[in-house]
Length: 72
Image (cartoon, rainbow, N blue to C red):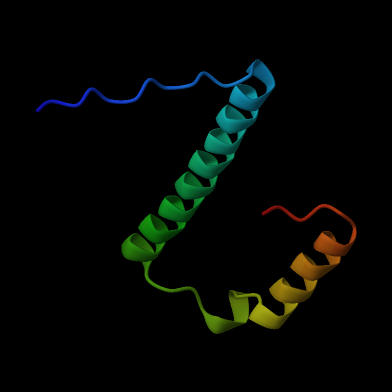
């Protein structure tokens, strides 16, 4: 007994463009993350003095989110 796959439903053009934009942002984020990891692999971890404390990063992110600039 063979079952055929269900037909795909095409997206509305605006929805398709939103998915493409999300994919592009995700790909760019992954590229930046991979670049940072490659730098660590090649050069080791940066000195503590050169790093931004996570609390400062969190506060900056929260400030951006309250201004409506945060991304999900």
